[in-house]
Figure 1 (cartoon, helix red, strand yellow):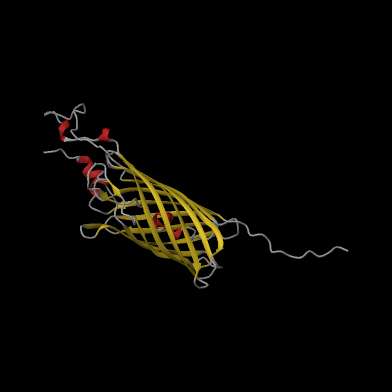
Figure 2: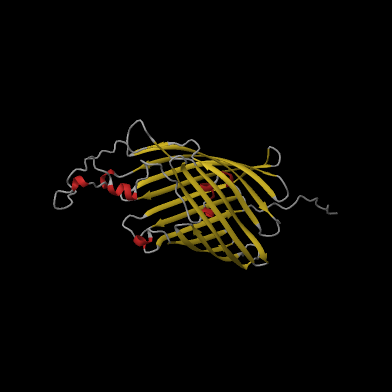
Length: 342
């Protein structure tokens, strides 16, 4: 019988079967990976975000993920009252015993229109160019057992004809941004997105049948509610479902909340601290802390495994770090008529 990639099946079977997208515990700090309609959906002109995640470092083959990107408002009063925004996104993920790597570069745009004084509806579209590859030299099979022990000099009797391939992914979505009062901090985003609309083919083996990256449907809610001059409540929820509904799906459901205290509200001296807790159903409890200083937010979270895999991880799911910086242009003073000097 033909040998199977044992470790590949257990830890890295990422490209031959339907592949799942990357995910972050702090999904609210990775907006372009959630919905392209979130491009430009923030208070300010430009935004830069970086996120690093290390998962299951307590087991022999940790998973590492990095995301970085930026977005901003490009044109105001576009087609009337609309705001046109653009963004770019970079993702890198390495998983499993044979270093299955995913590198993505994406561009996107959104168009937002106010429908009431408080609510703005936006629609977005994103194109992502992705590369998948693996290190075939790290594959081990039963063919390398010489009868007494493992011998790395023996062949694996397996060929990977397509260890490096490219795919194009298309995503779209809608978002509603609700701001209760522009003089207060209460603001919410909620919406839905459908990513991998084109279900691109991905396969490390050649053949007529290609595995697909299935469409991912996402519903989410995220927002802050001011209930005190110096205190806000955070609430967020996310539901992903991805896969072939006729065969089976992968799903993720996360809910969370927390509180933020503003140490200083003076303009250009803003300081805050927030304590949050999220729960990914069937997988992990996720405490996190955030620090805000002027236009910069730094966040740290840690996944505490609650799934059966905690036997291997000893509940140590892994840390995640995020940095967000928002650039805001200073509005020029209003035009006024100078008084003549006599």
